[in-house]
Image (cartoon, rainbow, N blue to C red; front, side, top):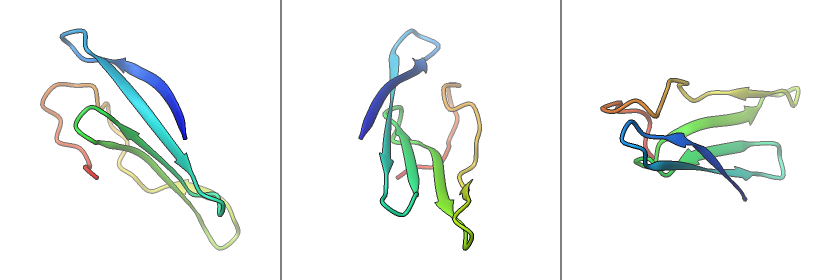
Length: 68
């Protein structure tokens, strides 16, 4: 698991990103800001990894986002 700082909220609180990588090339990145899924990459039949998660600015206050 890779842990890194993603950014800060409008009121200055730190947002941390947690990235998990599977043996098949799948990648899941989750933010501790409400458990939001930032990135979900899954390999297609040719092994090319594509992000299938909705990508928006998760640090904006009031954003609903994808939850785990």
